[in-house]
Image 1: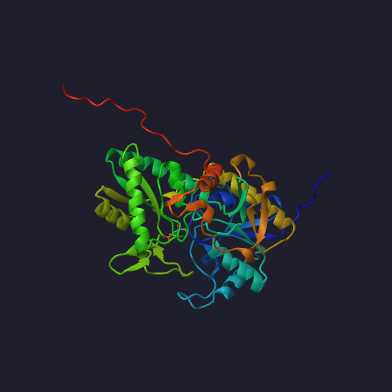
Image 2: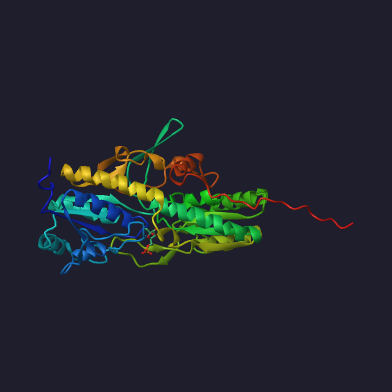
Length: 411
Ligand code: F6P
């Protein structure tokens, strides 16, 4: 039978990416574009997130164009523009967005983003009836996807967002690398990791040989700080090679002796249009306090944009493809206001469409690290967290210098 016309011929689907970039956005765009094209859609790319729908619009045609999905970042560029009124920008830009959706004849909008971008998309769907599909994205992994993690008879509400697997792999590799310099100098390196208010990404340093860890979910009060110092000392002294890499989340809330308050360290007090300040610098404070308290040399290292940069890793390529398959299902059923997600935490081989589902965008929001993943008493990530990560990263980066030399004693 010859198909006379594809189902959605004459219709246009547009894709935008908003918020912090990840290595998996281009692969998401390419995967969605390819599938939507097969259904007959013309596919547009909106540049710079919601900003591309303001003014005269900034739109490119992705239909039948070559695309490098493995290349990191987002070729459509990104911004933290909020179409809805915010403290920073009290004027609503929704009328401009609606005018451009109409002017460019966009029938369906796919928004690749975290809670902010998809939260705005959800509001447009609810208040203006715009057909939207949200596509998850964040290295912070804190966008509630309602993905189940089954381990030792327990069912834990976990999260798995495209971008996190590549970022986690990068942090594991980064940690494995800086271990060698920590080892050469018998130092403690305090490794600061992005993730805003969640410690999902910080934990991946353990797969590169990181020990202990501090996350934003549990604040470090005056009392907890003393216990933490003790714990670091014990761990350092009992480590066979006398060095440590301790991952700490950029959003750790830490007791400040001078102010007597527990607070995060801000890189800038400026907030974006979604009300987020920028964090940065906690590792320097922790390293100098550790040195002073323990008499062990400690240094700070900020991993910064490293996990957000570079090419899309294999787990992310497969994950974005499986979620894009689910987008096809949503498009065919014209089921908008939905976000495709992974049903269960599964290893690479099981990343298939049958393992995905979709959730109502009204149910999205933030999800911090589950309590099953972090041991507050020990300041460490649990076996359950490591099992979660082993599905995504497979094996730890645990190369070690293998030889020990006999000590020479003068005769
Ligand atoms: O949300 C992603 C993220 O990388 C956070 O981990 C980090 O706090 C923030 O973005 C940094 O934002 P910017 O790109 O504005 O420096």
